[in-house]
Every structure is written in C-alpha cells, then in structure tokens.
Image (tube, rainbow, N blue to C red; front, side, top):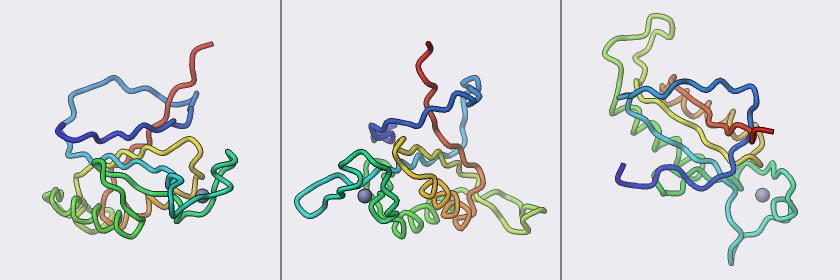
Length: 141
Ligand SMILES: [Zn+2]
C-alpha cells in the first residue's frame, strides 16, 4: 500500500458482527471512508459541532486513498475503478457483467445510515457487488 487508504475514523460498534479469519485476499479493493466535512474557514455545521447526528447528506465527504470526493465525484471514481476489473462472464442473475472489485465502506460512527445506503447505491450503479461495511467491536467488558 503506497498511500494511506484508511482515514482516522471512529467506526460504529457492532457487538453482533462476525469476525472472519484473516485470509490473503487478492481481490482488487477500494476502501471508501465516509466522514463529516471538517469545520473550516468556509464551512461549519452547528448540528455536528454539537455532537448530534447530522443528516445533511452533502455535509458528508467520501475519502478514497486520501483524496476527498463529493457523492457525485465518488460515483464517477467508483465507476472508473470498477471498470478496470470486470468479471470475465455476464452474471446470470443480474444479466450484466459485474465488477470483481470489492469495496470496503468505513464510516464515522456519527454518520447516519442514509450515508451507508447511498454508498451501497453508488456501488450498485458502478456494477460493484462485493461490498463490506467496516465496524469496530465494542471494547471487552
Ligand atoms: Zn453537518
């Protein structure tokens, strides 16, 4: 890995998540990180700053390999990456050639579910069907 692909996010905790054994996986993978736009000179969000869940979808950015994208730009990027690694045959159920690229969605724990759902939709439009959603195990008690 030449670039940092995983942003520093606080992942949602999932006590029911199943931990798969780590196996060497050669599947081409794109890691997408969903995080709220940081407060800056030209942007602030009272809801997020107060620690509440911000539901303004356009306040959430997607970072892929340290590059920030809007939702629209992220869709274009996913389509480009998906097209580079297409399956060799047409999927008999979907009746289209799908991408063999895998997407791992990592989102900030404060991100509303609509962000995850929207990212899954973008993957679907890019013909990506291998999707994992990252979560953190709660600390052992
Ligand atoms: Zn916001």
